[in-house]
Length: 133
Figure (cartoon, rainbow, N blue to C red):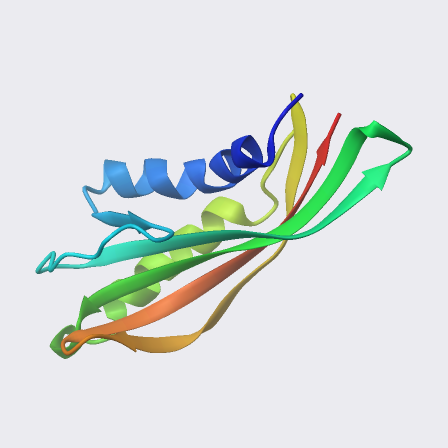
């Protein structure tokens, strides 16, 4: 049977693959943050609900993933907003069907943030649901 950890891996794979193609450093969940000196991403994935469907062998999970995009504070929003748009585009209408039925239910830019002394950020939130057969 598929595990919740495997669901989380499936949810974040598209953004991790895209970041690797762009050579962007990524901090996943509680990994340590170093000073990258350039734009970087933080990906946090959470399972927020679980329901048994019909029998103990079938479960439905809901959750969210937040992708925060950080750039040096003095570079403006253009790079962050362009990357936020790319992340949103990756997940709009996204779904997989085997061995997990997994789809996004909402994708949105949820705001601006700061990290440490020199970083500004924008965050995209991806809401998802999965059904494990």
